Length: 511
Image 1 (cartoon, rainbow, N blue to C red):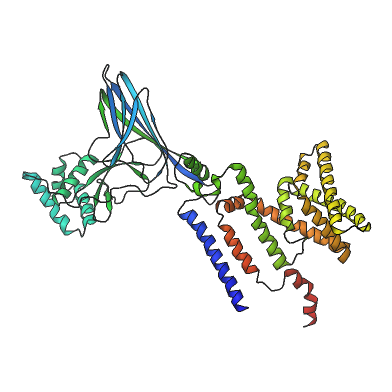
Image 2 (image 1 turned 90 degrees about the vertical axis):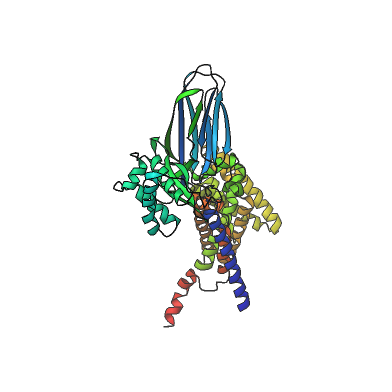
C-alpha cells in the first residue's frame, strides 16, 4: 500500500512539474501574455526625407535604415513615395533603401515608417567579433604631444579596455584640460568629440566604430545620437562619447553604423532628414495574431489560437470540463455533498452556458418535475427499465420542444436554448431522482437535486469566468496541474465536512 501511495505522489509530482514547466516556457520563452487584455508597447518611427530635385535629371536618394534583427520585433515597414522606385539591400553591417526616378523636379518628400514592439523580440544582431587591434595613426607636432600627454594618465588609471575608454571620454570632455581642447580645436559637437576619442584610442591601438541610434520616446523631432563601440574579445562595448555612459540603453535602436552619412543624394539639393517617434498600445494577443498572419514567428503558431475560430469556441468548452470535474471532486471529497450522478453537475453547467444560469435552473426544474411525474406513472405500468427510459427520453424531447415554442410565443428567446440541454442527462437525472425518492423518500430526493443544482452553479461560474477560460485555453499545460491535484485527492480518506457536522453529537457524548 505504501508503494502505491508513493507512486501516486510521484505521478502527481511529474504531472505538476510538466504542467508548471509548460506554462513557464510559454511565459518566459515564448512571451505569451498571462491575461487576455494585456497590452504591448508599439513604437512608430517615421523618417521624412525632403529635398529639391533638379529638373530633367535622374534622382537617386540612398538612406540607411535599421537592420531587421535590431532587438525589436518588426510589425510593419513601409516606404511611401510618389512614382519612385524602392530597393532595399544590405551593405556591410547596414541596410540601405534606395529611392530612384528618371525625372523629377521641385520639392520632394519621401517617407519611411517602421513599427516595432519589444514583445517576441530577440537579441539584436551584431557582428560576431570585431577587430581588437588598430595601427596607430601618425600624429605630428602639437597633436602628437597633446595625445601623448592625455594618454599617459589614462594608462595609469585604467585596468582594461572598458575603463581605458571611459577614462578617455572623461578626459576629452573635460573643459579644463588644455590638451583635450587643443585636439577638439574649439568644436565640442558630439561628432567631433567622438572623432577625438577614436583618435586617442587609435593611438593606443584600440579600434572603434561609430554607431548612430534613435531613442524610443514620444518626440516630434529627433536626431540620431552618436555612440562608440569596440570589441574586447568577448563582447561589444558601447559608450556615449559625450556623457561617457556605458552600455546601450534598452530604449535605443541602432539606425546605422560607420562613418558614412545617413543620406546620400544624386540629382537633388538641400536634403533634410527629420525623425519622429510615437508610442501606442496594442493588445498582446492581437499583436501575436497579426505577426503570425504576416509569417513572423510568434506563440500563435504553436497554440490553439492558430486553429479556426469556430473550432476555438468548441475547444474552449471542452478544455473547461476538467475544471468543472475538479470542482465536483473537491465538493464530493472534502465537503461530502451528494449529487445525481458523478459528473452530472458539470454537464448541466455546460448547458447553463447557453441558457444562462437563472433560465437554466428554471428549465431544468420544470422539465425534471414533469418528467418525474411521467416516470411515476410509467413505474405504475410496470414497464421494464429500457422501455421506461426510452419513453421518458421521448417525453423529455417533447417537453423541450413545447417549452421552446411557448417561450418563443411569449417573446423569451432564451427559452429556445432549452434544446441544448443534454437530453440523455435529463432523462437519467429524472430516473435517478425517482430511485432516490423510492429508496430514501421525497425530502432526501429534493435535497440531492438541490445539491446537484448548487454544484452545477459553482461549476458554471468557473467555466464561464473569462480570465480562467483564456488561461486554460492559452496554457493547456495547466490541465496537467489539475490532473496532479486529482491524483492527490484520490488518496484522501479523511472525514468530509458534512460528516463532521453529522457525527458532532457522538463526539460530544464521548467527552
